[in-house]
Image (cartoon, rainbow, N blue to C red):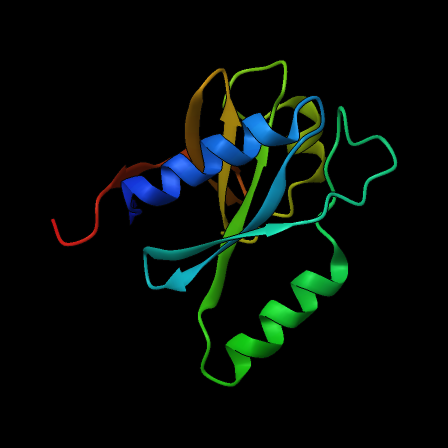
Length: 131
């Protein structure tokens, strides 16, 4: 699977990760089909935000409600690894649900793109929209 994401969205993910240090940044990836149209920043409500993330449940509920009435779909989620690479950690793997959602993980100044499958995370490719 190839997802479409603009360089502006990639830059936003990198900036959010930098601005949130030493905590993990997190949020939603919204769009349609394979195109990410919005990066929505959400509060990390986990009690240990330096090493874990939990997207504010209210933000997730609101995004799903908006999608049901024609808004962009929740394609996936993003979070950062303040002291690690942009790939799924053992904690990420333990909390994955295999729901097919896209995960963008920011670490070491890069963004890794993954799909949460029933068999585990699979690496994704991405390109700018319209290619």
